[in-house]
Length: 209
Image (cartoon, rainbow, N blue to C red; front, top):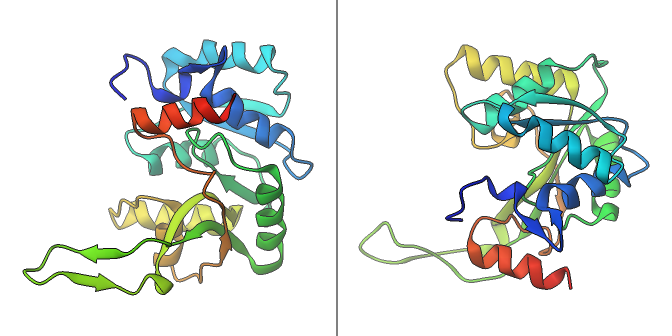
């Protein structure tokens, strides 16, 4: 993003990006508790956001890790949870998650054991790693989003196995799948895009008008 602070703390319409994300989970009837993993120097700002926007379900702020996996594990380790409690992992930089998608994916996870929000590929996809271009069958391609929802016991066991085997996963679905569990996908929407670049941020800003 080229900014001097992490993107989730940039403001749009006077509100930090992470505040929009937190409000989605605050407004879900199925969410009991919110935990944020963050750099310690932003703990005070997150507490200010909690108070300003009445994010009453935010119960803990834990120190994030070097990788996403480490941050999620730190948050998991701070919990006192039952084996079957559902854990929804979400990117702070996906502030436009519709609450109905969150709720429906939680219900699906309750029924099937897990739920990973994903978007079907709509564009032509090409593998350029070979001399001859390889056109991929997009009917079998999904863009993985968040939330990614698993039971506490399954996610914790898969995380511990990954650490035991020195495996670093880019998301929770890879870690859980690698531990031998079938992954169930729930159809997402384009507006649940991850803000990564300046153009993404500008798009989000325009959608907040």
